[in-house]
Figure 1 (cartoon, rainbow, N blue to C red):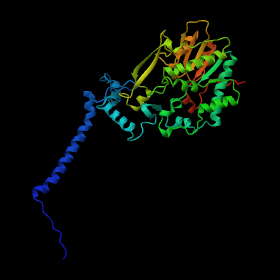
Figure 2 (cartoon, rainbow, N blue to C red; figure 1 turned 180 degrees about the horizontal axis):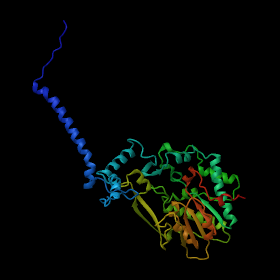
Figure 3 (cartoon, rainbow, N blue to C red; figure 1 turned 90 degrees about the vertical axis):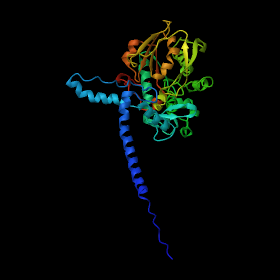
Figure 4 (cartoon, helix red, strand yellow; figure 1 turned 120 degrees about the horizontal axis):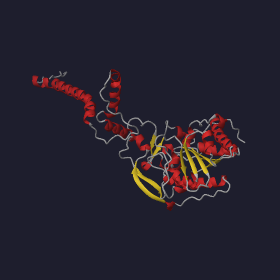
Length: 397
């Protein structure tokens, strides 16, 4: 005998509760949504934020004054929107929340510009994995690109030699070259031949007269006693600069006849450490708590800074205590900032030129005994710089 389904009729009051609750929920969510639209605006006015102040490497937009003229009124909206983008309510809290989720593996990777390694170590990864492909040996320099780097150095060397000026090159290695043990396993080197290895081998094969210093052995030795690179920054630290310093002086002694410069002992410098966060921690947007012990070596006899505060790329000239010492023209990047206080005092005069190219007239006007050329290893993952025509026209001997 077939069973007939039984329908249980709910009382009218209970049947009315479900649509009523649904309506109330919809109205509540709509109210929350509308209110949330005003939170950033009210927060900008009330300075609402749960995180600390922004530590961005730029000046945030200031609140624009009310326009005085019709012309000013035409630009007021753009200026106010620029201010609002930098100051809306909970802005830093939201930035930090996104950074935390990305850093811990949720959502998209930050912007491909850093790698979180072991024990708090951060590594620079500009433009995705381009430089790490080179480090891992998976993207060797083509013969054409390798030749362009060889030509760059040999033409500089030949041009300076024709003017009676010695030439020396050193290339600070990237942090992952010296500290590969802190990289995630997926970034381990596959072939142990980097772009720097290729360049050194090419110069050796061609019996090049370019004096290129390989600093990697000195840094590998020094790291047994001190940390020589920052954990949260792209650069070597003062101990890294100090490890490179005697090697560079020794090379200068070899190429300048009659010159014998002796590096100062570590005891001539005061060691101290502060708590600081580096440029890589800023890329994570976790600069509020991603910091480290920041080691410094301070000269007992101060040496002037080498960066012009008005324009960091404007050459700066310093003088040493011995007017009879050789003079130096230094082409450099930011790595030399951690080397200058060690190297600079040994020379009678130094022109510090933060530049990627060789400015012939400027070098000749300074009349140096030696030009030292410094550029970091990851520069070799891009195209070689293009020097002025007079330097490029020189034929290596």
